[in-house]
Structure formats: C-alpha cells, structure tokens
Length: 287
Image: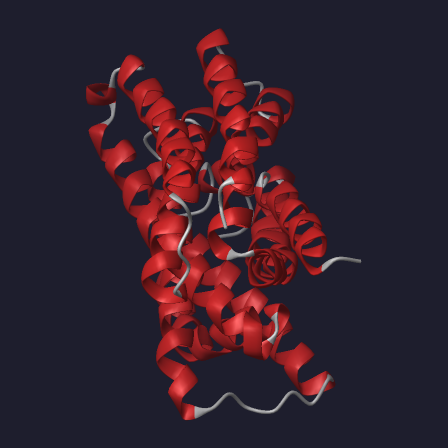
C-alpha cells in the first residue's frame, strides 16, 4: 500500500477512536474529580505502555529525544486531558467537541514550526476557513455564557496540537506506539505519586458509566488511538493528515446525542458539515 494512503487510513482510525474521548470524559467527570481522572488515565495507560515496551524489548530512546518526549507528555498525557476535563465541568461535550475543529490548524502550525513542513498557501486558506467556522459557532452560542469552559478548551487545543506535531516528528524514527508509550512512561512516576493525593474518598457510589468512561479514556484515548494517529501523521504528513480532525466533531456529536442524550442543534450540524468540506481542499494543497 502507498505510504500516503496508509497514513490517511491510520489517521482516520485514530480520529474515530479519539471521537469518543470527550463524551467519555464528560461521563467520567460527572462523578470523578477532573484532576484524579487525568492522573488515573495516565497511570493506567502508562503501566500498559511500559508493559508493551518491555514485552517487545524496545531500546531506550536517545538522550536527545527526552525533551521532545517531555513535550509530548505535557501536551497529550497531561495538558489536553486535564484542561478538557476541567472544561467539561462548565460546558457540554457537544459544545466542547466543536472546538476540536480548531485542532487541525493548531497541528498544522506546529507541524511547520516543529516538523519542518511547508504546505502551500491554499492549504492555509482551507484550514483557516474550517477553524473560522468553528470559532464562529462558539460565538453564536454565546461565549460569555461559559468563558471559563471555552478558554480551557482553547488551551487544551493549543497544547494538544503541539503534542501531536512533536510526537509525529519523533514517530518517523521511533514508531507511533513507541512514542506514546515512552511519553506515558516518562510521566508515570509523577502521575503515580499524585494518585494518593487525588484519590476519591470513596468509590462505593460510583456508577458503571463513570467506570466505563475512565476505562475508555485510559485505554483508547490515551494509548490505542495514538498508535494509529502518530503512525498516520508520520506517514501522511502532519499538516495533511491532521486535517482529518475536522471529521472528529461529526463523530463526536453523534456519540454525544446517542449516548449522552445531549441536544445537537442544526447549527452544530451545519458547522460540522462545512468544516468537513474543508478537509478535501486542505488535503489537495497540503504538499
């Protein structure tokens, strides 16, 4: 299979998996503290990542890679999970999902800064158009209604875009699952030390959906999704494959409506459809 095609397929699978992250987080933070949720998901995924590295006897990364791995850890292991979990205390998952439409632009910018990519001018036109549609949606919903939630989501998008681009650059040499596994292992000592501090007083009254949400974000959002996503970005290009994230709101909104029974307005659907159109244009002019 062509390398570029393989990159887009892997990227699409990663987006499908990530689409469940915010709905699952929304379910979990209804009963778990956001800080504990962030710590717990990182510890669970970190233990699994360590087991994978040991099972396949993966050589340790070079010392020069540690800074980049730390950036990945701060972006996608700590930053995005924590900021998005905090945001979901203020906004619904349906509202927060639309902000994911800004991720392609953030990823593309950091792909240029950190990955050395140089998309054509028309690419930026389509990417900015998609992001503008998303920002416009947030404004029509009355951003002043929850400025804290919206600002937290914007911060989550920025650090996540950096983590995606940095991880994709490393994946070209180390491999996709190896990068996220090492980033998880790097953060494991700190996260494990925070478990006693953030531990809930009691687990007795926690419902099954809360546990399912924790399991999903720990296993799929924190580890399995990145196996496909980083491989896709490395093979197909950070800026190009990153535009697939414009599809994530569509899948996420469907999950929010189906599983959480949250309202999905026609404006949400219109914005989602419009940003999906931008994927084709951005893909065409990415290289």
